[in-house]
Image (cartoon, rainbow, N blue to C red; front, top):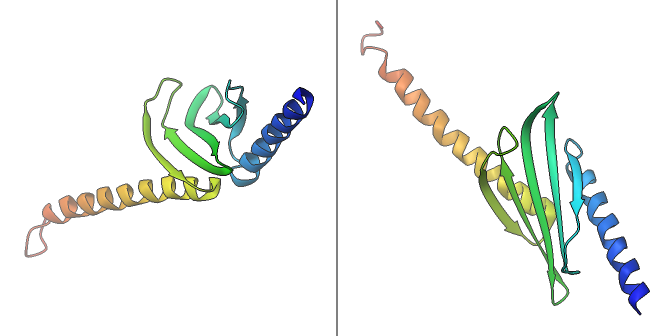
Length: 127
């Protein structure tokens, strides 16, 4: 019975890694061991040379046969703080929600930037 459980967990780890690399192939993924057989964790890193550009952390938790994914990301550097997280029923939706959040924030900042730029131009067009 113990061997089956170990094989089942190992298969889940492999499936999890394959799912991560299929959806986010631009990251180098490391799947971490956990003490809970229903929880899988992975860290994905994008880097350029020795510079860490982006870090993703993905957790898959299965409860009562239902999987829930949490994706969170950090910016530049090894010790960068987590910027935001998103939880959903599939990995792709958790990541899409995270991306949508950042896109919304980018649009807000772009709008504020444009307002400041327009404010630098005088009413008559001289500026």
